[in-house]
Length: 279
Image (cartoon, rainbow, N blue to C red; front, side):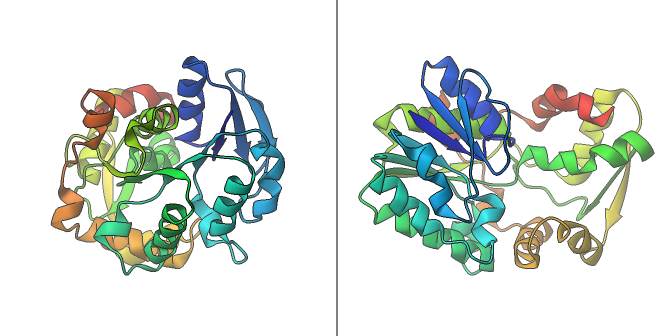
């Protein structure tokens, strides 16, 4: 049995599908009740309260751990999840971390995630850490403004990074959960090319076959929008990267291709699969 946390998200959904297609038994976990997909069973749990995972981990041998906002909850203790997994008989954990742990180690959110990585390394479990850069699916934040105003609004319009397709993250995670070849490794996951927000807007327009305007936000405007859904420290850490990526954040990593045997998917492919969100 493999437990997938964050199962209703942009990584969790394709990961569940990939594991099911490989014949694995899967338990999906999310904060709220949801329909089980692809033959999996679903159990609600709140990762900010690790004991709520107890039933889901019963009988599990592997865990995909995606903390997302739960890492920053006031009472969160992510290391307790790792301890609980070990006590429940889990032998392998694949942790979705962040590229910024290595490239921006002093950011508040990066310090917290590095602590989780360290706890996993010290747990005695088999582990793999995935460190993706920016997600292509972050463009879904523009879906409503594209539908209603034919506009993409973002800061730093001509500053790009090699954003990664969440489906590629899911495929890499599946490989790490099903195969021990990547045990004890840290994998940096990026897309195949540096792409700017303005270029992303152009890709969406091309897929729609209609114009999409680009409106450049100030950093302050962007932070105000972001803090409606993420803590201010995480917003600042993210904006620091998007404003001025350093050489490590501009690097095209070979790790997706190394694991999957193919190049990572470009942003255009992600747009083509998700274009209905923008219509």
